[in-house]
Length: 54
Image (cartoon, rainbow, N blue to C red; front, top):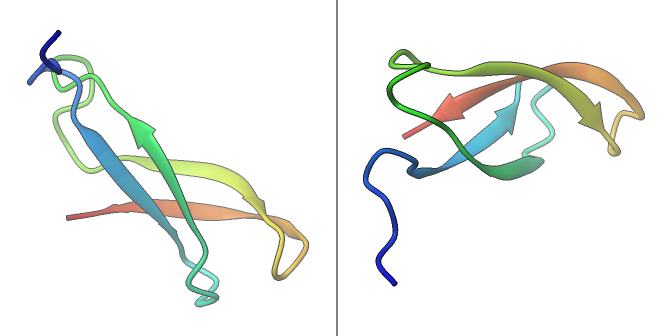
């Protein structure tokens, strides 16, 4: 079964500068711009913004 072009796999990189990443899928129809999520960074042990990298 082929992967959907509408839901690409993206990397979310921490803005705290630790280099920690999450790998998620996003819906291009609902989120056409770069995604920013507030998630837990275990290196700094707090919630920080994670931005989509390409």
